[in-house]
Length: 449
Ligand code: ADP
Image (cartoon, rainbow, N blue to C red):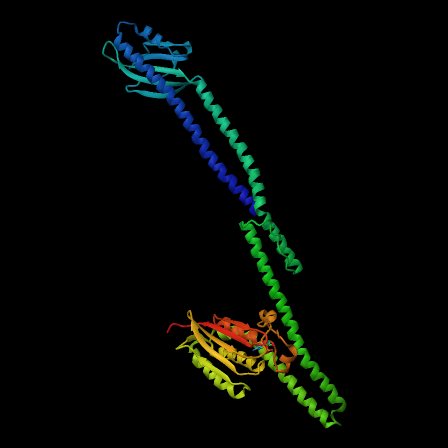
């Protein structure tokens, strides 16, 4: 069942129940109060009659009753076991209304020949000392007609209100669901076209529907961004792989033509083919690394002393580096939970870049603050221009393509480093100014030991 129909049916059902409860209560309260006020009036009259009977015993009973005769009804004296001795009435047809004999005060309703009567019976003692009952019976047809009228008024107004509410709840439901329908239409367009459409946000109200639309738009923007990056990555990666393949292919052609006669060509070709194939191997290894990183890091974390890890990495790399690496440890003890092999790889990437892209010493500093340990890898090289700094952690991004290629760079190092930092619940940031060197800072949560 559609949501709109459900809203419409639910609100209508709730209203029907409420109207039924309210109108039934109104009907019965009105009916009971009207009848009981009629009976109270009769009770009062009977009290007056009894009082007068006591005060004026000499007045004949019939005369007395006649004085109090009701506008439409009868007054009678009922005695146990006897037919009514005295009775006065406005209509002779009322003479035979069966009212019975009641020992105690009694109030009730009698139906007689299509008419309805209110009855009040009060016990009294006659001049002979016998118990009699004084009964006042009044026709209340007019009152019942009013009650019936009220019943129909309530029924008709309820039906009208239900019809109006059913129609308006349909309109309200449609209004509420309009943005959802727009969302569904946009989503099916996206599904069909494979595009990244956005929803038009109506006005700048911060209601739930606009929030939903804005969240959807933000999600679409992120998806689009990651889709563009993914496409860019695939195209960059194919391009990176195509270049060495083209070089290898050209040398093979050259070898075929002159390789046998000219040994210097043979030597150059073998050297270039070896360099390019090594490059390709390195690139594919890094690509695979990037893809598999998630699983490797997740299941192999152990507690380690960060200072010791950095120190041993620096020592191991120093002999192969052209610049001196200075390690300064400002932390007493910084235990962290890391996947050591991956974390060392992160350090190697940063140190290797500092070595490649600068012509001066490298400084590595370990500090701690606010429950985190930070490693800063600083160089005094060319630095990275501010406008490209936001992209250096993107896959295959290189500031200077020719230089990076010459140094054997793939543009994947920093994106691998960023992924490793994130998988350790940490982050990596860059502080750099053109000509003033670069400072890559990795921050990790420290363990309380
Ligand atoms: P690559 O394999 O090309 O070095 P990275 O992802 O490690 O790839 O680095 C991306 C780019 O960022 C590099 O091509 C280089 O232009 C720039 N870069 C990285 N580290 C430094 C640094 N310490 N100094 C200057 N430029 C750097």
